[in-house]
Image (cartoon, rainbow, N blue to C red):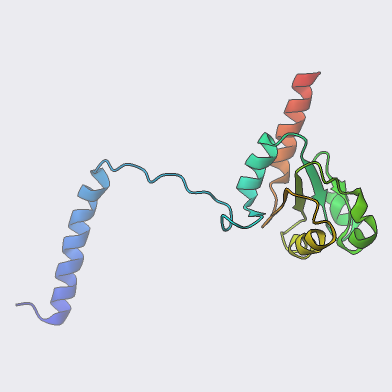
Amino acid sequence: MFPASNRFFAVLLAVMTALPALADEKRPMPPPVSRRIPASSPALTPADALAYMKETKNLYILDVSTTDEKFNKIHFVGAVHIPLRELPVRIGEIPSDRPVLLNCRTGRTVQEAYPAIKRLRPDIKELSYIAGTPLFQEYNDFANRQRDTLK
């Protein structure tokens, strides 16, 4: 029998020897998992939000960034800017007959805006937000290509 320290190295050697064989095995890929965070949540990862934006017709993109400066620095093509502090007085501008996606720069401000909008506008049935830093450039490139093909 090996002493305890030698047993550790023997096990380590056995595992390392088996790894190449395991890597060569053809195993089926696991089924795709929804990246919604969690499935019952209105939060979308930036990647899921990008896919959602590309496939959702008549989407109302609402940027709730706290300042015009942040909005002017970068925003989604076609987004409407209503800063968080202005939501109570401008809440009526948000349509209830379209899907609404909230965003800001980092995904923090939307976490305050989402419950406020749900409380003030329960008639908005499809409301979600981007939990994290949005993929502005990727969506804007897509939107601009779509626009160019319609010309």
